[in-house]
Length: 116
Image 1 (tube, helix red, strand yellow):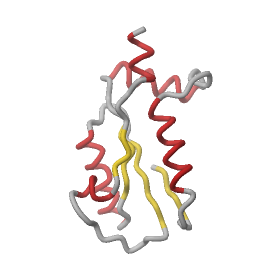
Image 2 (cartoon, rainbow, N blue to C red):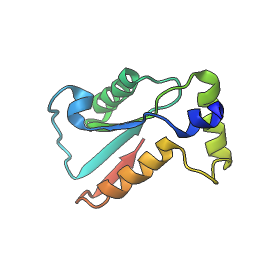
Image 3 (tube, rainbow, N blue to C red):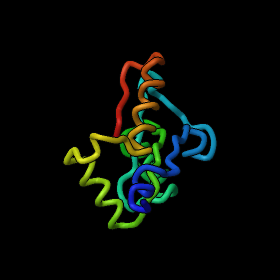
């Protein structure tokens, strides 16, 4: 149905530093990886803006996992379903992406991975 397709079939994407910051970014903490997962009603530019704000505040560049918005109602419903365990029977695209990204990044030599 349309509803389930909206929850499970998304165009989520993992953005590297160059894609987030429009080129190279200074990383004074290469032993750490910070990843920002955007919240509801956030387009990709808003997600990148969140990464830039985190960099300003903490001095750590962030990679971005962008979960596209489906509007306020579906975004909130997806959030509620995820928090209450109603999505245990299936994994949404964004959840799969987070799991896969973390599995790959944990193979690298980071001392700390921060997921925001």
